Amino acid sequence: MDANLILAIDGIAYGLLLAIAAAGLTLAFGAGGVLNLAHGTLVAAGGYLAVATSSGTWSSLAAGMLAATAVGAAGGGVMAAATAALNRRRHLDQALLTFGAALIGGDLLTTIFGPDILRPRVPAVLEGTVIVAGRPYPADRLAVLGIAVAIAVAGYGGLHRTRAGRLIRATVDDRGMVAGIGVNPRLVDAAVLVASGALAGLAGALSTPILGVGPDTADTVLLLSLIIVVCGGLGSVPGAVAAAVAVGLVQTVGVTTIPGLAPYLLIFTMALVLLARRTPLTGEVHR
Amino acid sequence: MLSVSDLTVGYQHDAPVLHGVTLDMGSQGVHAIVGANGAGKTTLLHTLAGHLRPTAGWVLCDGHDVTGWRPPDAARAGIALAPQGRRLWPSLTVRDHLTVTRPPRHRAHGRAWNVSDLLDLFPALAARLRHHAHQLSGGEQQMLTIARALRLAPRLLLADEPTEGLAPAIAAHLQTVLADLPRHGVPVCVALPHARSAAALASSLHVLTGGHLNGPIDSHGTGADDALRHHLALTSAARPTRTPPVEHNR
Image 1 (cartoon, chains in turn brown, red):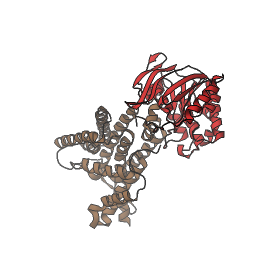
Image 2 (cartoon, chains in turn cyan, green):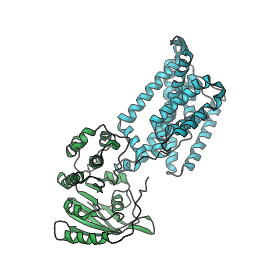
Image 3 (tube, each protein chain N blue to C red):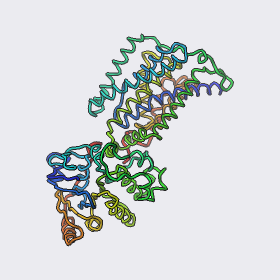
Image 4 (cartoon, chains in turn red, blue):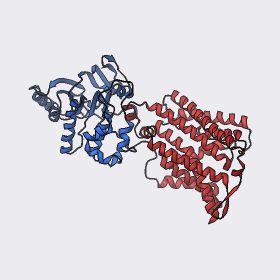
């Protein structure tokens, strides 16, 4: 039971990180119809930058997180400019463009940082353990969980309590009427891509103490994010968060309790969710 | 302030919905566009608000050629559309609708309506501020649609079938509000399916049949009765029904 509790905390922390990464992906799709396949690469870039910057001091750790966020935002900006230049052509054209960017970006990252899985050097306090429910638990993971919760809460507040957040949700609902109140929906699309890039970079930085970052990070994160976006409903942030936590739990608790099914468990769960869903999958909104 | 001349609009090039429509909307009063389903009312209003691009003709705003402008341009120039079907945002609350919409900055606009002005105009919305659009009654949804448009501080409000599907008492209330708006400084152009209610509401009246615009007719003169008869004669004849228009920017 206790062991499962620890695993569950792991799973929730991992799930929240995936949620932070996938929330932007689902919003960018819901608002502007852009499915950014370079999203996983932005996560990996953030992770690499955080590893390269942090040297064991608190200030370098903070600098690493900031740098990861900035590189993610810059990458999001590049994707916004590139997809805007496609002038909202069909999804296949966008997929080709963003997938190409993902391949090039992934190659660049491996060239710069090498083929090994890297982990950041964090301050000594975070290297230790804390006692949770009578068992030792790595302090850095607990810190990641805390920060992930804080970001999720802040993101929820931003989406629901600010005018920018309301504009984003309105654009997901009906972009024509957003244009009708004098706001260019393409500006909203670009802002969403930049913000989701920043969140992707930050999520990448935060996940390095748990998972490290390596050549497979981008593909894994993209695959998991796509599963989350599809299961949570395209364009739905609450759906994405729920799906992400579920994926996190399946990947930790589920895989250890039923090891025989480990490789299939996630896809099996996804199939069940898709069969059970009664709402259509499209991001198209009830009008 | 807004006028169109010789306007032709269609969803396919060879099948225009509006044929050579010429219309001048002054800066006061209520103008009504009357026509049956498929006559082109929504097409005309959507073209005025920038949601559709005309294939021929001109749209002029304050004497400037604005043909083919986009919805944000129209909104910033003070043209606000309360669309048919309301098109509220399902995930936003009533208050969100009224706060996310705001008057254009650095542009000449009409009377500014803050949220409490709009709640004075539509007291029914005051108790509904935290509700989502789909939780409202049809009448309240229509009130919110008009209130959202007024938040833009428009110089002209385009209301497309504002009483569609509403109980007679609610419809009458909304018509009273629309008829009063010019006194609050907002001229209105309203599209309605029935000449009778349009004549009661509007100071001038145009009849749209099969994409051709007739009028204007002074609704308080003897012309109104003629228009009514004319309109009834035209709509009672068997006319081909058209598929409802789709907006191009979805």
